[in-house]
Amino acid sequence: MILVIESIVLCALFTLMVYIMSRDPIKTLYNYPPKIQECVMSLDDYKDRIPTKKNKVVAKVGASLLFVVILALILRFINGYTTFLKAFGYGFLLWTIVNAYDAIVLDIIWFCHDPHFVFKGTEDMVDEYHNYWFHIKGFFIGEGLAIAVCCLAGLVVSLMSYGGIEQPTKVPDTVEVREAIVEEDSEEKVEMILQIDGKVIPVTWEDNASVDALSELADDGLEIQMSMYGGFEQVGSIGQSIARDDKQTTTSAGDIVLYSGNQIVVFYGSNSWAYTRLGKINLSEDELTELLSNGDVTLTLSR
Image (cartoon, rainbow, N blue to C red):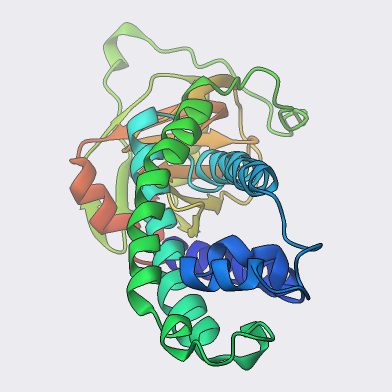
């Protein structure tokens, strides 16, 4: 679902950019088939308005660098990727979707058939304006450019510093943590049982005050309505604050953490933030993706 939303937003932004540029078609002359370019350059009406090759290169490099920045921000903060390979792969997929949309919808369907894009004096060059192969070749050239752009975006994501990102203000805990005095003859304690949509899930719990506090809440059964977020996690409110010991953490699939002292987060992807670790689900990444990435779920804790 997040891929669909991102694709629609990027295609819409790209369409807006093309629409703004197309109000004066001469500015996009170098996006036309070569024979049309040659003809327009020979016409007196356009001689003083033809953009230089240098302007073309500067515009394409500037647009590519801007896309690198936008793509890196999306991959890091929307999708939660922190590694080069994952960021590159997903970025390349997004680029390919927008590139295909550009070639088929904007170029072949819109540009090739809209009289607005026909230069005065080239009205008889119908075959060139309907040169679909030119735009198909442009798609494959764009895929080659995507390798360089997505490599840069992946590099930015992998090198991005998390230390400078402002973390949410730590709210004082409202639940007083009581020190448990455990006698040697009663060391054995009952583990919490985690269910997701009624299915018992194997978990290895951490040994800390946050898990102890959560375990007390689970005595009477604790049901939490979870929501998908960012394409890599499910998050839900516990209903009150419990003990926490937040540390900067890079999570992986299966991690269960406490966020802001009052929300439980279950990951099927990765993110980096200040969390308190609660436990680890003992399932494969594919099993976690199948379990958590297809809609909101209900999480139940009991003992």
